[in-house]
Image (cartoon, rainbow, N blue to C red; front, side, top):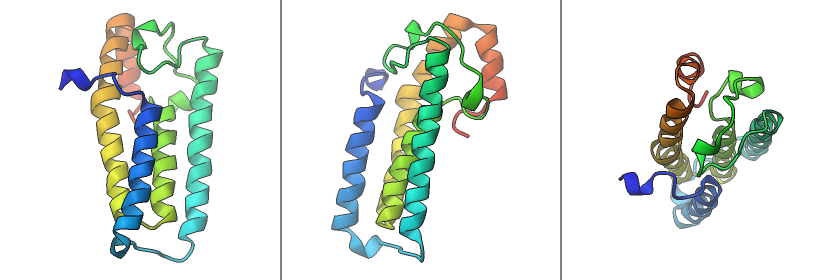
Length: 153
């Protein structure tokens, strides 16, 4: 499975997953679990996801390091300030929240499962390879960061 590592840009994965959530909501309307305010909740979760992802990008820009997810070896700094004190992957967390907002919008149980699959794929084939590359590059300081800040939240 190493052939899948760092191959699919996370934004492309997000787009494919968003399309899958939309299709699932249409194909399986019986798996819809609407509740009062689910669309308002979806908007709140979407905004939270966007803000989380932007906060991650801003911190990377401040540190003048790459935001290219396919080339973690090009990182020039360990970013552990701002939102990176709460999550090692706020850009991915923001994507997951935005995807979750789509599942919430349609109140789709199948969509919720697809969000979990998105997170699992991203963890296995993007985040873990990034962590290995950064650990090899930055050594003990990055290892300490791994021990103090959670992967997602």
